[in-house]
Each structure stands twice: as C-alpha cells, then as structure tokens.
Image (cartoon, rainbow, N blue to C red):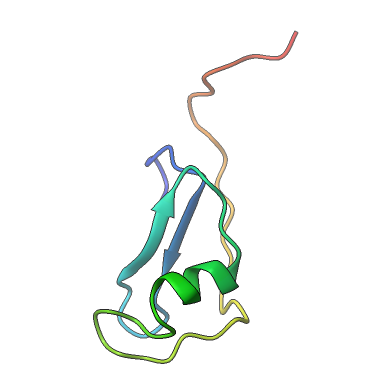
Length: 66
C-alpha cells in the first residue's frame, strides 16, 4: 500500500489477494458484498471485523494547507 497514492487497500487475511483498492473509502460490509462474502482467490469467508489496520503517511502531498 505504501507509495500507491490510494487511500484504501483491503487484502484477504489468508492469501493476501487485493479485495478492494481505490480512492473511495469502503466499509468492510461493502467490500464483503462486492466479493459475495468470500475471497475470489482462495475462497476464505470474509469477516466484517478487520484483522489488521495500517495507516501510512502520504510522502508527497498533492496540496498544502495555508
């Protein structure tokens, strides 16, 4: 995720497949519904409770506050 410039990336806990990546923030429920409740790569049932959350700073901000 670091350096991608995207605000959100959701990965499968089991296999690491990208379940969602984009500029629009999605709730866990939206990501689960979009993937029919399971990881399209490994078939693991998706949980609404996040396993791990990481927050990374933006290295090159596009805008500055004045």
